[in-house]
Picture 1 (cartoon, rainbow, N blue to C red):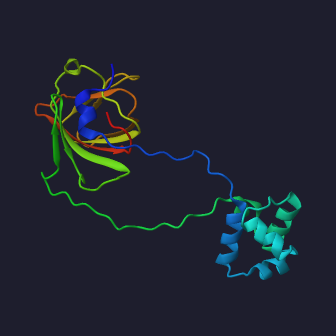
Picture 2 (picture 1 turned 45 degrees about the horizontal axis):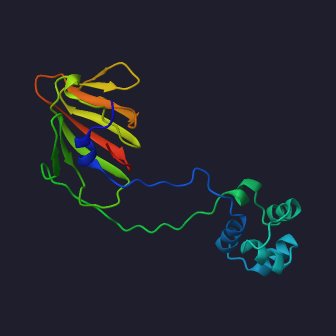
Picture 3 (picture 1 turned 120 degrees about the vertical axis):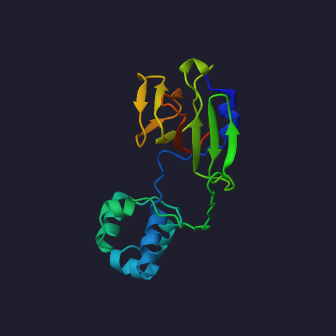
Length: 210
């Protein structure tokens, strides 16, 4: 099965990505350590025995320090090697965003199998997509295709019971209060098994949601 058109239209959001390994920025890290201790280049020079010009070139990534120079830095500044090699912390600026969704006031996206209510829908560029879903489907046969989307998903049953069908595992029964975390690019589908339609809360990580 492939992703359903309805689910794809209901929850699409632009995906983001970042490098798996952050490049080593020793010069930037050295400058961060120096400024955090309120040291001048002259202070560091006296502590390490390295010329100010050499230190300036290192901080500005104009030269790559030799192992001997790195040893002088760690010894003179009284730090260990992992401290010097740790990627510099980026300054974070919070925008203090928030988006309140009153009961029943989310953005509705009904489909033949689910009735989604998107929560926090007015907030753009979110890293997570929270939504409450009434599971209308009563049989796996009601799904023409698997539901799948990039990222990961946390799901908790708020009311009723469901059967979670997944591409690589046997169907799993979840009762009220049960929760599960799974890779959501794996095909999945929910079916209500209780007398009334089950209600679940889902939180998806940012990605192209199917």
